[in-house]
Structure formats: C-alpha cells, structure tokens
Picture 1 (spheres, helix red, strand yellow):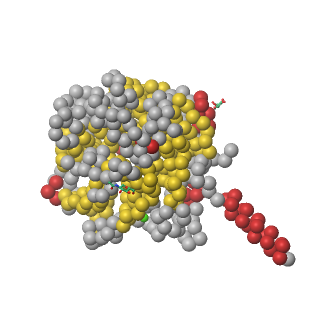
Picture 2 (tube, rainbow, N blue to C red):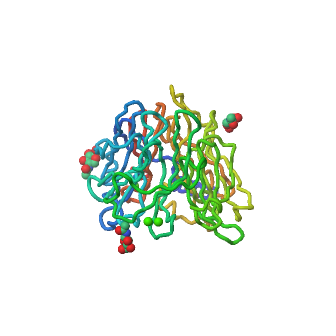
Picture 3 (cartoon, helix red, strand yellow):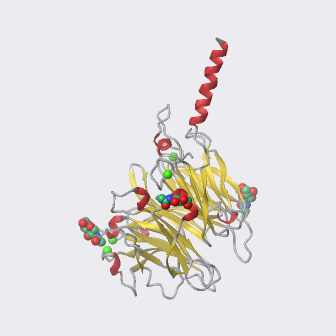
Length: 442
Ligand SMILES: *[C@@H]1O[C@H](CO)[C@@H](O)[C@H](O)[C@H]1NC(C)=O
Ligand SMILES: *[C@@H]1O[C@H](CO)[C@@H](O)[C@H](O)[C@H]1NC(C)=O
Ligand SMILES: *[C@@H]1O[C@H](CO)[C@@H](O)[C@H](O)[C@H]1NC(C)=O
Ligand SMILES: [Ca+2]
Ligand SMILES: [Ca+2]
Ligand SMILES: [Ca+2]
Ligand SMILES: [Ca+2]
C-alpha cells in the first residue's frame, strides 16, 4: 500500500516534469551573414489567406563602421516555409542606400493601405552619421522604394532609431513621430522629438527631394527610443510619451494636458529615473501579469548593465513608480576607439501558444519570458520568470547564445511557421552569423 502510494507520487512528479516548460529553445543551426545587426520579422499585411510561413519576411540590417559606402539591407521571404533549414537560407540584398541602417519597423496598414516598412538609419560614427527614414511597399518583390521621408535633412546629420505612427495634427492621417540626435563637431549633442507631416498620398508618390514637412516638438529630451501610452490620473486619461534618453542618461515621462503634442506649453514632465546611466531601449507590457502595464528598460551605467522594470501606479501623476531589478551584472567588451555598452533591446514573448493561453489555478495568467540582446557583451539572453506570482520580480538569466565575439545585434521572435511553438532568429554582429532556435520538440 505504502509502496503503491509512493509510486503514484513518483509518477505524478514525472508528469509534472514532462509538462514543465523548458526555458531555452532548441538550436536549429546558423547561417553566415557578415555584420548582421538589427533583425525583425513581419507578416505581410493585407493577405490573410496564404500559409503564415509564406507571409513572414525576415529583414536584416548590416553596417560597416569604416567603409564610407552605404550599407546593405537584407531580407528572406517565406521565413516560415523551411525554418529548420536555416543552414540553407538564402538572404537577398534589398539595396545599399543608407548609412548604418538601424531597426526596420512595420508601418500600420492604414497609413498607406499596403504592407509597408520604415527603415531608420544613421549613427554617431563618421562617415555613417547621415540617417534617413526610408519607407518601402513590402507587398512587392523586391520591395518598392526606398522613399526617404526625411529628405529635408540637408545640413544636419540626424540619426534615427524609431518611428511611431500618430495623427499629430488631427487631420485624420497618421504622421511619423520620431526622435533623433546629431553630434556637431563642436558643442553638445543635439536631440529632438519631431513629427513629419503625412501628405496623405499613396506610398510611391512621396516627394523625392523634400520628403515630408518636419516639425520640431521638443529639443534636448528624447533621442533614441520612446513609446506612446495612455495613462490615468484622477479618473482622467492622458496621452504620454515615455522616453529612454540615452544622452541625458535618464528615463522620462512626458504627458500632455490637452493631448496636443504641438503645444509644448501644455506638456508636463515626470523624471522617472535619473540614476540608471545610458538608457538603451524600453518596452511597455504587463510583465508581472497583475493586469497593469509596466515599463521595462535596459541601461548601462558605464561599468555594468541592468534590466529594470517600473510598475505604473494607479495615478501616474501622484503615485509611486516602484522599481525592480530583473537582471544585472552585464559587462561590456572593450571596443577599440569606440564606446561599448550592454545590454541592448528587450522583448517579452511566450515559448508556446498553449503556455500563453494557460489559465493558472487562481485564475491568473502566465508571465512572459524576456528575450534580451546583450549588445556589446556578445551574447543573447532569455530571462525566465522564477514564478507566476505578480509580487515576485526575480528572473533566471539564461544565455541563449554566446558568440564569443565582441558584439551581437538584435533578434526576431514569433511563431514563424504557425505550429504553436515560438521561433527565434538572433544576430551575431562580430561573428557575422544568424542563429535560429525553436521551442518545438524534435
Ligand atoms: C529545408 O531545408 C533542409 C535543410 O537545409 C533541406 O534539406 C530541405 O530540402 C528543405 N526543404 C524544403 C521543402 O525546401
Ligand atoms: C486607405 O483606405 C481608406 C478606406 O478605404 C481611405 O479612407 C484612405 O483614404 C486610404 N488611404 C490611403 C493613403 O490611400
Ligand atoms: C553601476 O552598477 C554597479 C552594479 O550594480 C554598481 O556597483 C556601480 O556602483 C554602478 N556605477 C555607477 C557609476 O553608478
Ligand atoms: Ca495627420
Ligand atoms: Ca496630413
Ligand atoms: Ca504589471
Ligand atoms: Ca514555430
């Protein structure tokens, strides 16, 4: 009887073990791609019928900091058609039109009524300082473009990293809201929050010489990454911009009293954190699954890198943003003649669709994992929540890939072949390699 009882407990234990989620996905192999940096994968919009694996395109930026010629952008159509066959992927060059291309971002379908992307570019390193905002119609093969909507930039070499689509002037079309920076030979780095006015034309008749009319919203604040969210205070909703300010080394929240960003007199500021060092990227999501959004940032304090989360209080104006350290002890490799930092961009994800949809015994939901680029520490990471308790902010830090070289780029994450298991592509910049992973069992 005792032995039988023990046997039951033992097999129950085994069952629990086999159904537990493994933190790390299965490595599928790699494919060489010199200087692979920013990586994203998007589903073509406007065609909901064909196989999802066919509709995914992988986009990759590459750049050479020394060679003055523009850098190559790459793509792989049908990313999910043979995802496991990574060793045989044949990426195509899209073009060589931009200096130091950064992240390719998908444009909401309604902006041009087509599947479109915008590719930001430019960085601090001469001769790669003149950035562009290149838009493409991604439905066509090769993509139609680029059309540089920042073509008015003539004298200043602005670098761009992110564009959000928002109707700033209230005329019904979505305008391009962006942050940019420029380092003059003498004097302090300039930073601007700007919006580019959508002329309301089809994508392929963007004026080639002038692009879109530019309006400066604010100087000396947002410079690289920022997000737009709605937050409440005293029952009223405010339009807010949360900015990870790299040069000013602070996390800031701006909110507009009348909802018009063109009216800076009506904008108020809350410094969320001025002690974190160089903030790199940020993400807004309900990371601890308590039903309220949180702000996640990566930051480098010139010695060590960290990932922090801030809980947004019920009243964002009078309440306290409670800060948590999710991961620390990131150490940057030395870059000769350059400034290194770690970690890079974070992104939440679920290893499987079933895991995401699971309801816990208390009625709660699973917390997401976090994929994290280590940037100048040469590794990619997965941060695994230790528990699904919303009050517990501890994470296990797993190395997904250690390239054993100086710098890695970004990653793309999604279920690229639609089998319910999440897939990942991440870039080794110095190692010149794309690595593929899946949570699907063998
Ligand atoms: C997928 O890739 C594998 C490995 O590279 C290859 O052997 C196989 O023929 C490919 N399958 C298809 C359908 O292309
Ligand atoms: C997109 O389609 C909508 C609805 O048909 C239309 O109102 C809008 O003007 C179109 N926009 C563009 C840029 O073609
Ligand atoms: C950076 O972070 C490390 C580890 O958290 C800490 O020991 C160090 O004092 C910090 N340095 C600065 C300049 O804040
Ligand atoms: Ca508009
Ligand atoms: Ca307009
Ligand atoms: Ca939360
Ligand atoms: Ca999959």
